[in-house]
Image 1 (tube, helix red, strand yellow):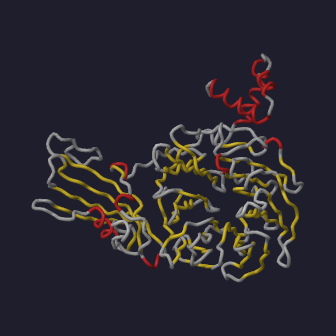
Image 2 (tube, helix red, strand yellow):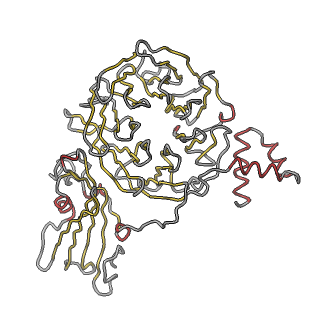
Image 3 (cartoon, one colour):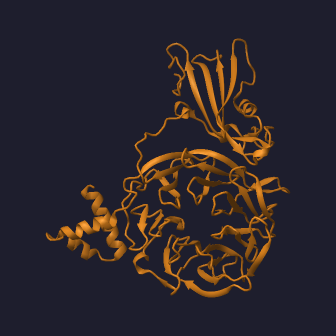
Length: 503
């Protein structure tokens, strides 16, 4: 590691410990070799030799991400859909629609998501938003088929949701308290009403203790205070309250071993609690992550976030850790997540110069295999929003408000032609359409237009990629990517199909 890079970490460590003078004295001392080596070991992490496994393209803005407990699926939440990605292939397994308000004919974005312990099911929740009242406040989906297994309607909607370790109890922060249901039966087991609606909940891994935070509706709620409850079906008991934040709390989570509770507020402050004693660990009391985002590793030793000096910090010592994911000057990290097994790490990054988002999937165990090229690499990527409506319609009827066709339907070929096909074929122009199903869950439509009436472009070729949408029985697809190739006349550019523009 270069001297400059190493000094940066020494400075960050000094700030974290509040011992700048001690560290600089060690660095300048001739007898500090052992101390420096020890510091290097303490700054080491499994992620300093990580490799980028996949780069995933979000369709629209991503608001939340979560790995399944077995690490095989990454769920990414967008405004009107949830994408389930296979982490081994970097491909979409299925797209789930989000919640729906029938009276307004609009989709409502999920408030929170949670996987069942066996990774077979995904629970999603949403709040009522003004005049938008969801048909279902809580839905549990089958991740393989997209079928709805469990549905709950609550008048005010639901906030966070979590399964217990057995997968037989589902907790939801609904209406004015917390409710527990049996799963998959859907029987209401018990609930405890709180004085105010609940913003966030966290469940200790053994299911015995729950942490809750109030929603700040009128400014009078204790939304900066954490309440700890001993869960009992007869009557949950308030164990303690933790008061250490100045601003509203954004996120709370127990470590996997149950020894610590981590909380963050919207001003970026992160607190690591000895929740049994009601005390804050001082070594980690200077942690700050933009917007309060963080993720905990499955071994309970690392915390990732949008930190100034590093993407990851040791949760025990508070020291920043070396990794290959430094903050980018051109991109902002919006969301991060560890896989439960600790071998994968996901980052959602957004360009400062555009609204484009990408999801970087890192692996901390380098593989000898080289990244596989895909057919999409040979095409110029197109904006889906430019050609298709952000619609929840089930067929490709033209959207009344945008004049664009829906990206969802049962016929991928029809969907592609509706947006990219020639509206009128003049003499000599030709158009051919092909559809392929390279995998069980994907479809590709190739649309080739030749002999075009243009002085430079002889032909256009479009490739449109589709993934399964909704319940498998409905046999619907959604556009997830589109690209374009060009074939040029004479000396106006490439004579063969390329993604380069004609001159």
